[in-house]
Length: 253
Image (cartoon, rainbow, N blue to C red; front, side, top):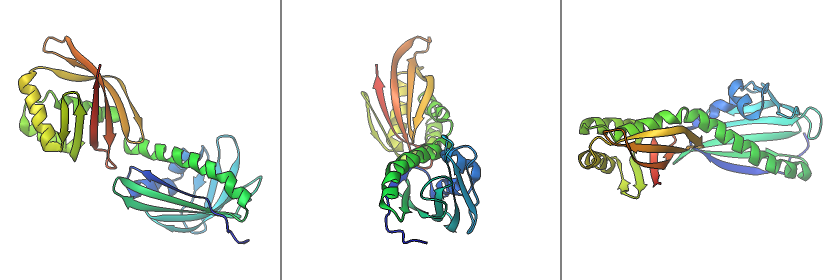
């Protein structure tokens, strides 16, 4: 092989565990989810790598090395165009990070022009990748939001603590016009106080919860015991790498 002296590099943080991220390099269904329908990968040394882009372009190569869940390397090239199959090498490494997984990509080329052509391509493709992984890691965000809103109508302190531990991180933060809270214990005490001073008030999600890479946007209505609206607003939730609520910022309107 010609010397591959030109390398674009790219590093991104994906808020999911390495084992979850690595499945997208070993399972053809998940591989196709971020490349295009019909793409496949046989994740073993010598296994075929095939990419069919949504525009119909095709690329292929073979796996050189695989070390789950931390590293995979494969050759790569276009079936019609340059570089051709086997004429470049992609190496992807995964490292556990504080908020998930640090992905590092190096793509080795023999030609500087081919390198430059792929810089924006990888920026775009890894952005798609981050979204696909996050969509699986944080599937059904509305259910997590609904569980959070239901907490504010829970009268039992023990149940509040238990359910809060199930859906939120121990260091969860809550901020709105009436809250500046840090930690599950502080949040639990605040919920219990809300029950004393606003008995019978409930929060209900309005419409779908919108999700992008671990950030969830959800509108809500607060209703009184008689069912009348007492307030409306929108919350911004951030989720940690394990899918738990890490912070909530509320906006009343």
